[in-house]
Image 1 (cartoon, one colour):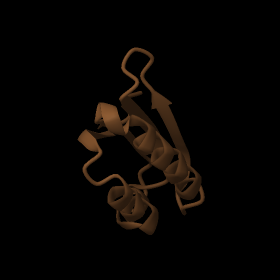
Image 2 (cartoon, helix red, strand yellow):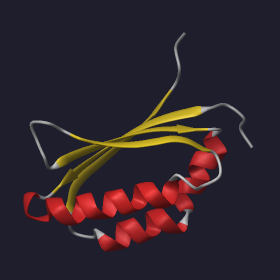
Image 3 (cartoon, one colour):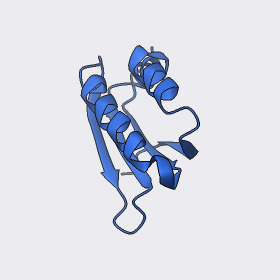
Image 4 (spheres, rainbow, N blue to C red):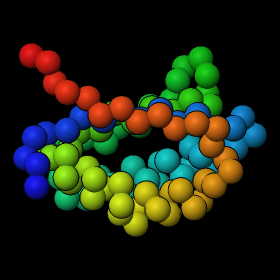
Length: 98
């Protein structure tokens, strides 16, 4: 298991007609994910100018624990609940620069 702390930024662009559904499901995902092993920070934001755009700022204890999150039930449930409601998801794994 990789022991390096991992930072992730994920952008989720909801279809305009599905914004409220996606928001509701994202908030549910936050509650479920914050209890996962290795989750240090899992903050959800909504763009002030484009209400269809949501952004996660995440910190995980290790890369491997973040990978476990990607395969976990909460994220699978989210994908199923929002199928067809999201235009785009962009996920960036970041390296810390001192």
